[in-house]
Length: 211
Ligand code: GAR
Image (cartoon, rainbow, N blue to C red; front, top):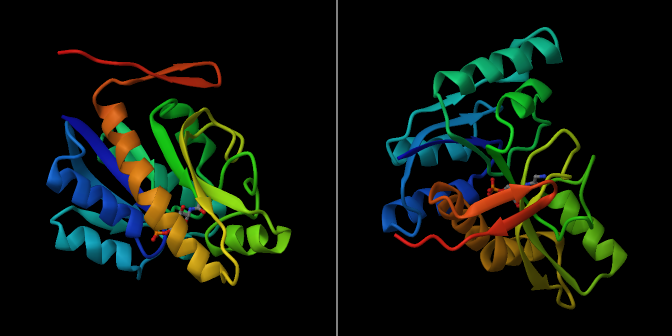
């Protein structure tokens, strides 16, 4: 069983999709060993507790600087001894020490079709605001491995979603979650946990595993 830690910052609907996937066995070979938030009072922690998963927060507000926070955060992650770290709506930058230590073992869900609408400043609702401002007709979501550059790691899965006339950022965000994020993130975790992902350079191949 793969030990999986989920990092969150807010509502936790992607976390819920993962919890449900493990329960329904659409995600197999996974044990959710912990949920860690950078935010003390978020719905995500409640979702984790309801599912019986240890949930903790390490907030930057409790540290004198960013470096001290990132060190404490990484120590907390290490305590769970994860095989895979999933960023499910984790809206602060990942400590570089963590990226190096868990190379090819951190995946992130981003609410656009990378390389569009990603990088510094593109997170959460802001992504959908920019999508509507630009007037694109198709957006979507991407699951990728986390590397040093923000949203630059090898892409595991993408799914397009139509932008519709009259969309508000909130309406579009919900459609992208329903039609893309809650599908491709659990699927990517299942693929990783069952040895179906092979990374070469910036390319991820999905391999067929016969047992
Ligand atoms: C999701 O849309 C996720 O893709 C996005 O934040 C939202 C969190 O929602 N992540 C990013 O923007 C990362 N750059 P949730 O807490 O309900 O899963």
